[in-house]
Image 1 (cartoon, rainbow over the protein chains, first blue to last red):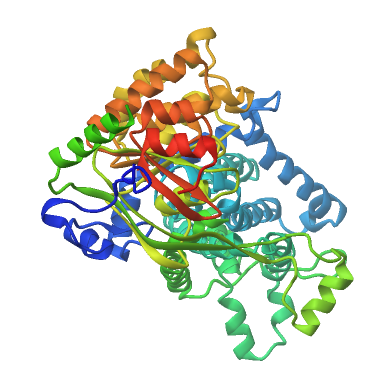
Image 2 (image 1 turned 45 degrees about the vertical axis):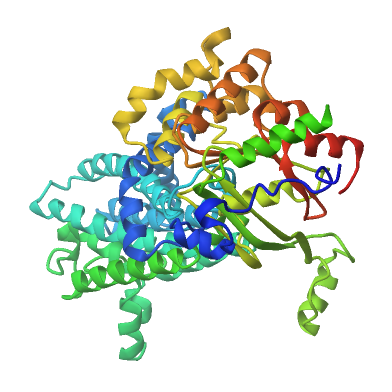
Length: 323
Length: 270
């Protein structure tokens, strides 16, 4: 009976492997440490292999957003339209900005949509890990797929808003021009920038959930500072040059100006719009200066944000399932 | 009787006394995790502020030493059951094998990427079952063509559509059993080197339990290793020939299922 209290050791390696320590056994058969972070090139390959997942995840999420609403997918177009209507009412009608600037409403809408793209990508990125823990704990895939997918969702939403925007621009007697082609590279660069920020915030948000409480305030500050609804150039004229330069590098302003120029190159033409003041004495957003190196600024922001964001996110890859 | 059983045991051990291919090697694994909001102390804003100012560690963060030095080796083609009372560390161990929880000390070596299959983790509730099948398969690394090819067999296996067209409804409308069935079907659609199942067999009706048992056997034949956590001792007896008994994060017993489960039911520790 002594054999019964002395159970057969099923763990012990047999035959040729007898006597090996667990570590030696693992090495001999090429086992790897579970949940170990893959190398950066391998991670990029894994992520590339999941590109179909990223795009169908984004589409599925976008569609699911309005499943409980009666009007359904119509809200994708209604939401940006209503946004524009509110801004037109407040800034165009009540604050009378429209009197001096024929393009003001188009100028405003471009700014709002472009800024909202960054804003919502960052907000969605912050929650992308913590809101999808179920998925992360159930299936294995490179986690960077999530913040990237959430940025793609926001990009799809922006493209729908763009259709509304084109209608508004045409209704304001602005003719389509060759500069409209610049919309594509501007969007590509901004998407890269947003993806980078979304990945940074995804890692921060996964560790400290407090940050999602703080984000709306930070983003709102950024919005008012960037001059989405009014031109800030009049206010910063008195600043020292160094601060004006720093200010001109604000990525939100860079991407908004690029898009505004693409849609309405005329609004940057000083001869056509010499500038003026509204009833309250504020400078109107006309005849803006587009820095010569604006594409360099846009490209730098895009690459720097994306690379830093990607590496920063990857560094913590093995810990996202923890919650 | 008992002696005869031991003799057959000895015999089988002698017969396959040759090198086997290990798939999971746990080497003195310790897992400690921090629990936020453990609820000790006053939860008011002023007390939180004074803690921050005095730089005292929040009493709401506690460390739980969930697994304390577990070692074992599982081989190709084995189905291993994990038993133990609630909170003994079985599910934590499974999550660690899957690579979701980092080990504090020791290491777990695996062959390929183990897949965890649990009923607690939900897929995306707002999406239809259909979308979840496609997304789940894509997330596991299948190509869109492979997904199209296997889609129907996954839906058929889950049996979701047996009572009408449920697959096109959002998953939030599913009962917990239906959700678990669909999840199992998605994960079982792919051959995994190591498949980890957390109580998945306890859910679902009789017919589905039969089908999933058959599928687990198939997966085992396809040269994978299966780990099964369950409180249903009969499910363990039917699917696993080897069982590991864990209590308080420590390994109590590791051996043939009949022996370990019998002792576990009697509460007899070796």
